[in-house]
Length: 306
Image (tube, rainbow, N blue to C red; front, side, top):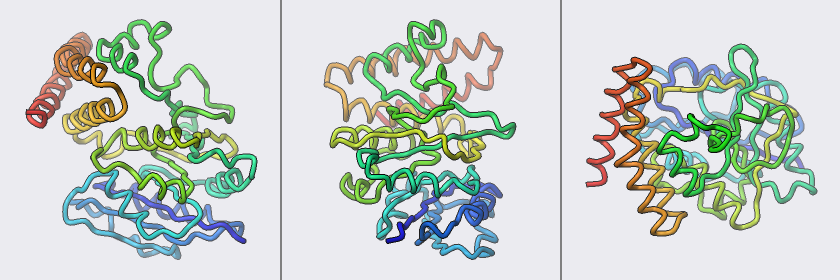
């Protein structure tokens, strides 16, 4: 029986990146699988990024939200009625190559890989350099020392959450793959009831990965194929908002997965220590505008907590 795939793309003011991503999917379609649906969930974009999407032979469905519902909820919207064997959550700032879909499907169909529930692939930038995208799952200690910036001052003693020391040139089981190309068994996605919608954006894939691991499924980084990933995306345009959502989702994750005392310590260091460490770092670089964005982000966080 030929395997099937649904692709879900959440869009928010991605401009021409979205159409480039959509059209790259055409080049990745092969006879070895069936592409049931490409679902674009638009979170109330105000640009023209949805224009000209119909000039494709893809089985395209567009869901237009009247407000920004967040990334996790939009992903769940797109996957809601799926009957495919596999789901691919794909960022609009990516482009696929010829084998970007066939190799992940081939890998997941191999019975010896039944314990792999989530798969990511190699990502390259504009210069074809391999991006180091895989991460360690966060722990209370990691959150604690990152709030003090110790991972930047003493990286050997306090490793970054991203596995930057590894060149990403070999395939292996990892803690977490990047959400820009998040390839999942559809039955696993349904078992976990999709992404936790309390995470508006950021940490939703980390939470999903932790829950998958708790029921025996692993994450795998595959180098047999690759995609292009621009990185930064539309969040670069709203730095204060991005910081707020990162911090808020970090606290939500800590509250959900760590003990009460650990959460209290992480919340205290995040709110009372981390903003000053961040601002000091930007001032040392002479970036006063970045300091202003940090202050705005933390004001939003405090307003949300209070």
